Length: 272
Image (cartoon, rainbow, N blue to C red; front, side):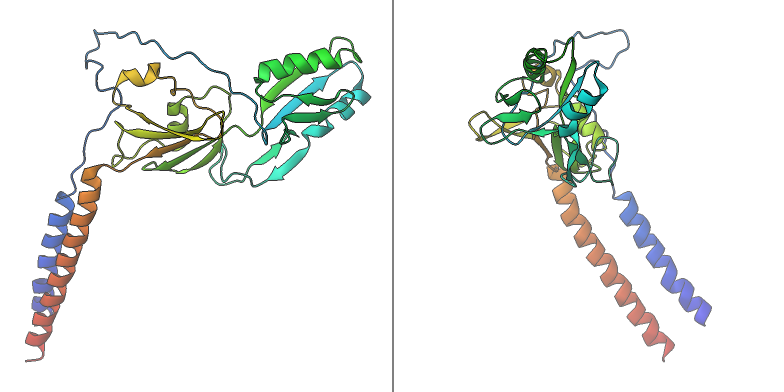
């Protein structure tokens, strides 16, 4: 009696679960849908020119100087000691560890203070221009110095329908939107590739909102294809995903209700 009732109870549940699984439709997604699907066709794409990032107040610059005097090198590079811990939740090579930023902090007036040369105005300069300026100033004291400059806080935030939404420290100063999406684990199947939102602060401190269609190769020639420090990339969910979520909730409620009703019927028969 009990075994018969058990079989009577389990089989309908398995059937309902199977129906729920087959209702999950997997869609084919791809970038650059305007590229012909043929190995004999080659499309030459012209990318947008790379615009070097400019230095702004509160940026952190890693400035290293090497001279023939080891003692002087220690003094010149002391400003690159770690100064900030946990500023971002992830870096380009780790999703779990917090990043440590080191370098010279640009003050609110756009200056950095360095040994020997004092205050240098670096606001609105590129890292290459800062390198040339530091080289010029430090050459007064040391012969043939080797200077390297890079942003320590070149961070990009990726949110929305991606595998790992978080903030990353970028490994280079000319990352593309695909670099950022790749670090975030790519867009989920439920994310919109045709309308990716980019939020950027302009030189006036105001926010710009730009839409990029990654279904089209025109995105590569967009002036926003290359990212800048503090950009935010947001991937919206597809309309199907929103509708599917609502449908799944309705289906789940129906399955649970059916299961409860079935249990009630079985219990009622067992107690008779």
